Length: 116
Image (cartoon, rainbow, N blue to C red; front, side, top):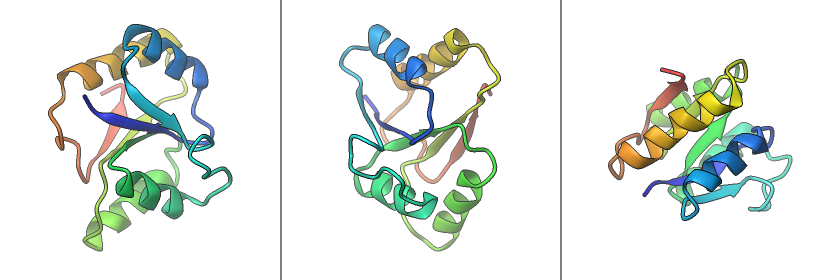
């Protein structure tokens, strides 16, 4: 199953709901990893090093920093940009589907907008 990281401002209600449905999901918050306050490129580098797909609500800067990494030939396990305008239950359902139906490495170098 995929490894995830939640960005600093990611809604933790979504994380908790996802963990209720997938108790063995390997997910860590940026805060738990000691990356609190880190700028986006540092968070992306850490997530890549840990081979974790980053969950974020940041539509403004995180995708462009991700594309810069990919263009520079740097690794990224992927970024899921989850809309903060959808109901929490829908976000959980969408991430559950991604977590249970994805193959290892399927999202490498990609930015995925949720909902699709």
